[in-house]
Length: 366
Image (cartoon, rainbow, N blue to C red; front, side, top):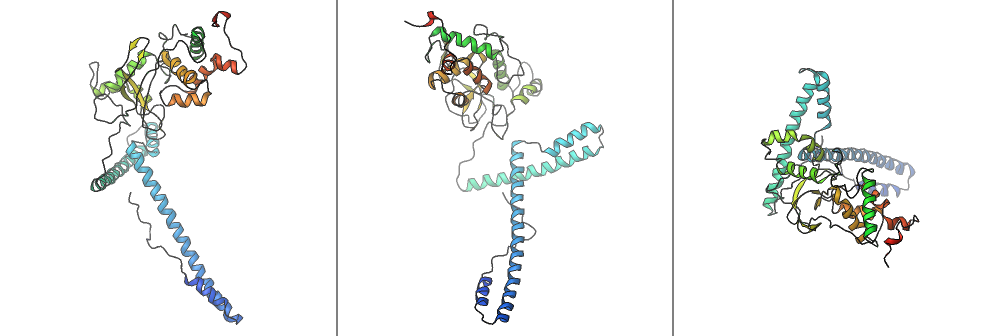
């Protein structure tokens, strides 16, 4: 990006004659003559020092200007609302009049933002033109920043997405132990509101962004599919207004990619679940933290199997960090609390910690 020039573009350079003058003065045998020569050199050094300080101040000015332009461009391209705009809007809402100073500030900020955005777009166009002249491939469109329905011409990640299988044994546990483990996990996760037999009918609180039933995820998929087209007899504007709360909760962000970033839809590549073929089924995904893979949202009834496969089968009952890191690479809604509840109810891990293995005599295979 072009950086504006500081008040003066002339930068002083180091004067090598000063060092030569010092060496020459040191060789003068007459003390008075040597002192006069050193005073002259000292004055020159002072001027050099002052010029260096000016150059340092100008360099800092250019650095701050570059940072401001970079941040402004990044924020504008991401749709970020500057702090002064938000504060101005608050002043308007508290002022209650169209002629308040807050209203004037909002208009001024909007004008400045439009000018900055136009300049940023112009710089971006110059960058694209430069890339075209150098025969560089154009940047592919990215689905960040908006809900991505099916059929739109964007490039989605190509990594395999799948649902976990339904496990009845494994990881050093027989069927009865896994069944008890499943019940204990869901009782801990739902605070004794549902066990394994009732988890599919349990409705998680709507304000919980991680625990979602199959019906809630189906509603999310329906909203994401029709966000840009409208549905249920509603045009796109009315449909978005109806579901604006969902969008504000799932709205993608640009900085620090995280849990609610880059919502898009994918089709399952492989797999069956509980005897059902789910290949080709549409699932809701988001990007991982690196922004290069799709990770799928799981309904609450499949959380146990996802963590069982990772913790008990693949990692051989390793700790929380290893389990959480691998879960984050595959799934979008498994936070620390869910991982802790799973590990705290694991019978193998409890036995290793000295809590004893809680099984009856009939559970032990002969």
